[in-house]
Image (cartoon, rainbow, N blue to C red; front, side, top):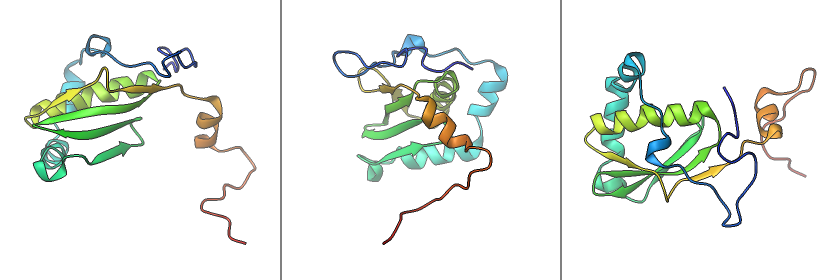
Length: 137
């Protein structure tokens, strides 16, 4: 899957690129089945509650951040520029609809270019020990 297909790895004069509804892929039967997972629908129902308004969640393994905007709306406020992240967001959009809500993208979605060093950092370098946490003096 390709990365930086929307941003080309660059920021615009305005500071960011966004994602429009018509740029999201249609789902096939397998992806629709994935979107209909009962535990995922329950999670989105909980996230859509009025008590969750204003809260956001970074779905790190999927590559985006959603925020509860109230009135049954979840907004994608951040998206990593990678095809897999856009596809994952499309699947989650359907899950949100199954949960009785709706997803908003543009103009709220900020697409962040996927930097090579970020991708390499996630994979780790062979032979190097990865240190996790804060250095304390």
